[in-house]
Length: 294
Image 1 (cartoon, helix red, strand yellow):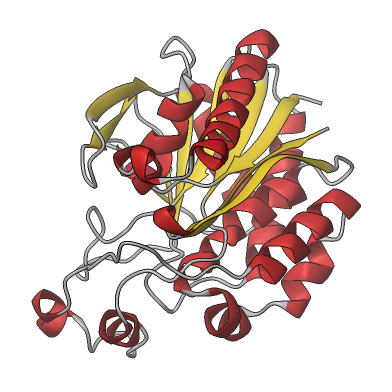
Image 2 (tube, rainbow, N blue to C red; image 1 turned 180 degrees about the vertical axis):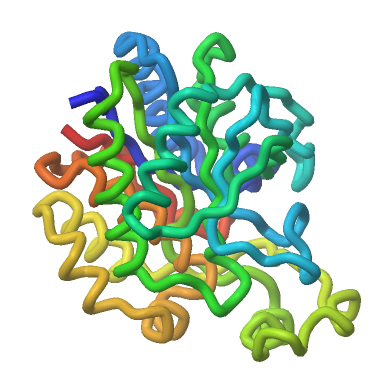
């Protein structure tokens, strides 16, 4: 199998910008797990890292809200928002084009960009892992933040197709899924604004700026149910049990990003997750976790 490693981790930029606010034990646990993943990836010597992140309305605004965008050019540009630096990362065009073709062949429509821009959902985990820029990436943006969004079950299907496509490639590829776990993004008024029907939001977007509190609620039961499902190979059952509305109500709008984790799990269906770290860091507003699939 061409996939030589698979990992998932939280991606909030606040993990870096509020590093000092988190209790030291929790911060050190999360940071050391990210560093461990970075070291493991380096040891695997992959030809490419396919990383699944999302967009938070800074690249794809209301004039265009794609469900999936695959970077297929020569480099990806980190836009330097949310306190992250502007970075340029090389991309692996051959692997990206193979994934795009594989998706289309299996009747999965996927947008693509030859001038790919990425936000903190990609940049934060790559920096925390210390990912070497000599390893090109294949960035896949998935819309987890601007409803309507694809269902968790849809992510399983796309993950399956990506995994099958990668099996036929000569390149060694590592998968990384980013996002979540439970968290509520923005104040209640903004969250309600985001839930408005498609086509009704763009005129009022400037009235609902993002406001982040000092601390936020975390649903540890939801987080641990997801982690348990990934450990036991029950990603499909979890996706069926947790449709969009239930995730929103019980784990927050930010928890919709666990779709990216489900995609990775579906790409390596015979692998099981090992939890490297899980911490309920209120100062980071998020149930923060890092897992490795083996």
